[in-house]
Length: 211
Ligand code: NI
Image 1 (cartoon, rainbow, N blue to C red):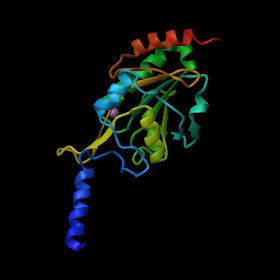
Image 2: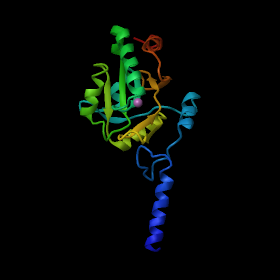
Image 3: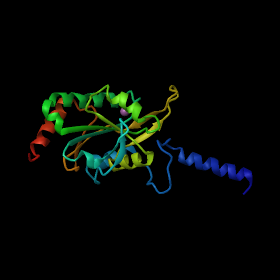
Image 4: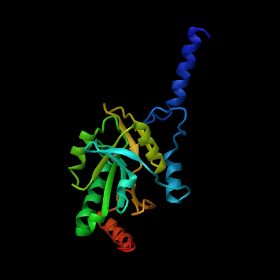
């Protein structure tokens, strides 16, 4: 192939991959990214299993796996620390729920899993989660492992580059996932669910746990 043809083929490849500027560069063994609509459909109608094991690093630099949290009701949220839209609102609702639960909140563990491990180092996560609640744990880690966890939870995430902004934003689904004390996915709170509503559901869920 001539140099010119090679260049054209290369440019074509970039254009094909650039349809949605995906959050992470695709590596061959990983499944293709799915659209926001497809993923929402899967979650809303329970078409596929949701959740799964993970091994990540928390905001203190300690490795944490899903098994570490058995016995706690988990509230799992995916986002990124410089998000100016959904993340602060939903994390505030989670914080409100924990405060309203009082002593019962000890049975609940909220987790904030980053969609941008490049920027969200443990240090960055630490200063972020502290703004919301002392019990909130931030998780980051190997980008490939994070992609695996996001896929397991059917999270939509794609970098967008608005012309008026110098820093890329990440479009992402913003559900709060509820996982029971045995590590089994229970359901999700839609975006914008108030903390008070979370409290109702959490109380019902904890009432089913044998003590
Ligand atoms: Ni966000």
